[in-house]
Length: 168
Length: 154
Image 1 (cartoon, rainbow over the protein chains, first blue to last red):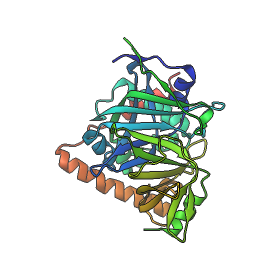
Image 2 (cartoon, chains in turn brown, orange):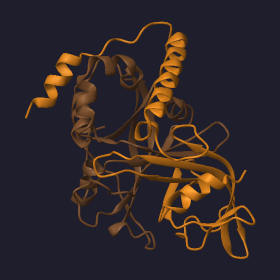
Image 3 (cartoon, helix red, strand yellow):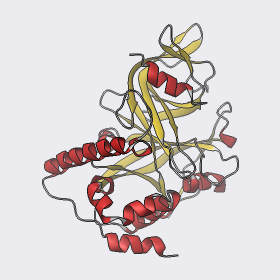
Image 4 (cartoon, each protein chain N blue to C red):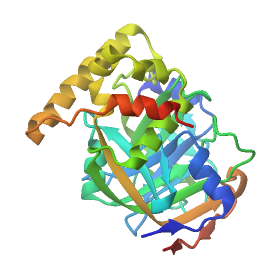
């Protein structure tokens, strides 16, 4: 699909927010939103979230109902001043995260750097063995279709809708 | 059903994330202030963005927080139905869900006691075994040496 063309403040949100609120829709049409660690795969123009194979519901939901949303509204920990809130509505595809694609290394590094205590955990072979399920993951790839932006996170304002443009 | 303990947890948050599903099929989330009516066992939203006002449908309300270094994680999701009453959007809660599965705290297992972590480990291992049994073949081992070396690369 190619790379996004985004305003820098929106791209900064994708890169720097520690969590997003990720929504899937279940079989009954019920939305389910959980805080999730996002990864911005800029070269591919997509957002990626993952879930452990032990807790695969969001991946199953996304497979059945590919319309999902990734909301960035909690800037805690992000080195940004008055960032906007950003809602991405997109189409999801899912796959097992096996064969360790190159982006998965970048995602792993980003995650560990943001959680300093996790470094000793992943460096400990016993911890890795006991919690193997934490590292057996399903990837959910979100191709944005519509992006809404609330400047400074002010939800009292009408959001700006960005045209989603890809550059080949 | 109203869960007094988890409602007390929800009251500690300045705002939550309310999500509905638009007619297009895509979810729509907004961050908003929620008020809690214990007597009527309802959640009220006194001020909402225009996209959500007037909706009557299944919705969910998420409260979560974490510290800057991602420690101290808490999360609580309330499923329910939206409807309008006397010009105010309200939600009648159905289920209360937490990341740990507990019904008395929104604290995530790894932010809790060693017993919480042990329970989480056992649950995760059991659920992963179920997934792998359905899959019918083992998961490829992760290349830990390469992954750990990558952490130290500039």
